[in-house]
Image (cartoon, rainbow, N blue to C red; front, side, top):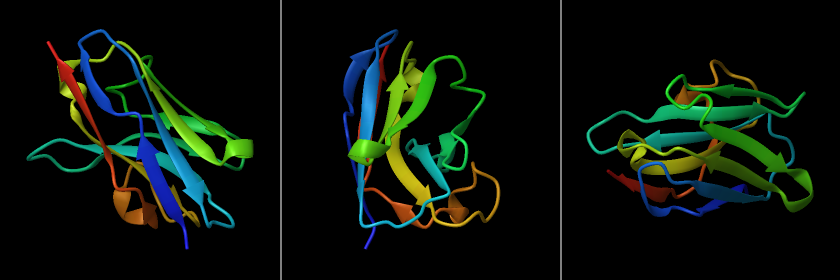
Amino acid sequence: QVQLVESGGGSVQAGGSLRLSCAASGYTYITYWGWFRQAPGKEREGVATIYTGGGITYYADSVKGRFTISQDNARNTLYLQMNSLKPEDTAMYYCAAMSAYGGNWYDSTYYNYWGQGTQVTVSS
């Protein structure tokens, strides 16, 4: 059974940085690893994803140039480095995995596995 466990969330002032981690276990093959976020009263949105076939990465326009997704295959861990954080980045952040390609990377409905989430709060 696939398990995803996020860590690294917390509270930070605007302009600060955080690095989220997602420890994965129990999987055989994943096509896309992704990070999503959901703020209160808003829909879950795709933040970044990495295609395991070639390491290609995709980002939401709102985080381009500030966030970096990466993976450490030896440690079975996915990361999201978040720099220059803004109050609008405040949300619950989720790690997700898509086992077989189903559709657009930013569409949460195509991801099969999810972590429990880690809260990120950015104060102004």
